[in-house]
Length: 416
Image 1 (cartoon, rainbow, N blue to C red):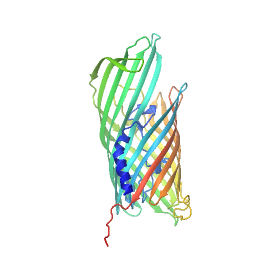
Image 2 (cartoon, one colour):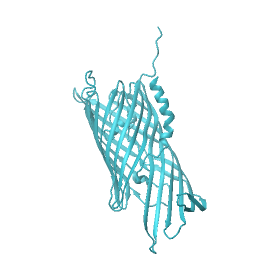
Image 3 (cartoon, rainbow, N blue to C red):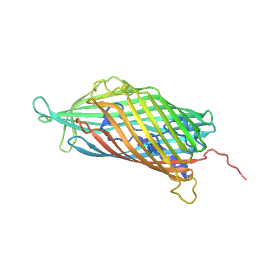
Image 4 (cartoon, helix red, strand yellow):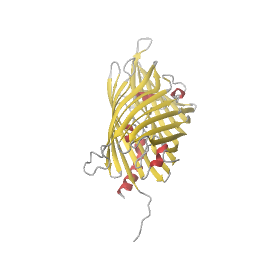
């Protein structure tokens, strides 16, 4: 009963949590924003590795894992990010908190199903630039942006045999992104302001396969495959232009404004292929690697008149694993704890000033058992971008917490 109350409360608050600003990255200025979802906290603690199905907890990276479930599982997780932003001359600090996922997995014999809500991408930036015009007057430009593209998914999986399972997710993407740019010249009090709003919707799919088999009496080989075909999104755009002045207290006074007709934009979520391979001992340890290829060169911008930044195909490389000293120990709780670690390197597919933007991080974490349920703690230290060539380097530290509640929800009660 207590578990079900927790689930109801979490479901009621999830919509509010997903609507909050959950990134502070200046690179979320581009394209669809910063891609947020990297799996449950247990996967993230291994660098984003998702090559194994679990009997009591969800693997949301590969839908083929759902048929591995033996207990109904409810999962929720969140992350707080501390960032240090730096270029060649300035430093800034930022902090953001996000709800990473909320999902339910249901076992049905050889079948399994899952549904839930995850963030696909997020926009959240505040960038100021100054310079000089051709007459030597100082110019100022400030850009703000916030919003999210969230994803509701429902998926199913089938175990073809004891070694192979197949699955698919149907995903509905939706969200709003709002941006504002203010430009002015020091000798003029009047400034120009542009506000853009985009309402984005569309469907997508994710197909998955998991394979494992014993190669010796103790060791198992694991292999995984996921493929997401290219998906189309529709962005309904609105734009408002105005000339404004600001008082000493910061309040805005509008001199004149007009709504400008902006064409709707057809956006793309690029196709993505991920292949993984690993080896391990059941309930003891696992080490694996995964490589992801994404056609980010197919990305387009929400507005046709935006030309700062281009895109290229991206790659991500992950290596990670876990270790359990003794999963069935009665005398030592620490022996039942799952110890995880991983490394991730990614070319995110964004090119600015002929510089490819890279992102890499070190991960480690703990899985704290609570009967069939667990609490997952994850920590990540990473770097995105570069401080040279007038770009920005982000040094970030993530603290993630995940809760997985597993039980037999659907069982017949006996009356004596």
